[in-house]
Length: 332
Image (cartoon, rainbow, N blue to C red; front, side):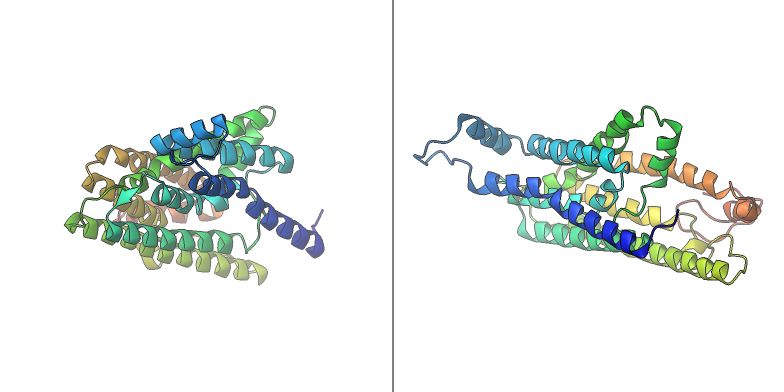
């Protein structure tokens, strides 16, 4: 049954309002943590439990950010998904949560940082978030909650009976581990006052290059998909595979751009003697490698583009942008 324009507009508005409302608990807690925690010199009688929370939060910023994420995202978003029968809400927040985590670490009572490094990282983080948010809503035709990630849709079909509880781990708790992990460098940046040096400049260059590459890759992909939709509307056959622009030199340039961004962020942490925090970027790379396999399998499922895509695989690097290969040569 087709959805009427009025129903779609109503659903879009309600989902947009929902997306705003669900973040309010985190903002309220952050405000209370910064302005209503006893500082030790106050003579007012504070709740014993609240004082303990404040003390723990001051001593364990990583623990506190995980607790907020668990309650406000992993649990609350999961409950919303059970009501709506869709995990869509985690997708737009994927582009916003890193900024929220960054400001949590930056405003933490015990934060310390080189001011230039903090400004540079937070500015780049905002640019990354705006670019990815714009790309997400452009892909979704500026709709809120129109559809959920195709990978979760597949899992929902495969595990229909148990998906209600499996989704908590697959779509939310795993995202918490993933997102907090790749955002660890933001904690490193705001926990040390080491002066700016050459490695910071290199990290900025990597982050900026990643953002620019991902922007062009996503924009060219959007134009390609829009052009194909116009061809379908005219009754003409669509172009099977995008092989122009940056897609001429890499089969997944958007993934490469994201990798450069996160590894650039990890370089900031390494420069502050927190190299172990690159583990988040490493896990992200491993996940994207797996997603690459899934995407390529999906590209080969349609017989109308399978042969063209196989030739594309034979002549084009899978990740690292490079010149075209001869069909007989193995791709990078």
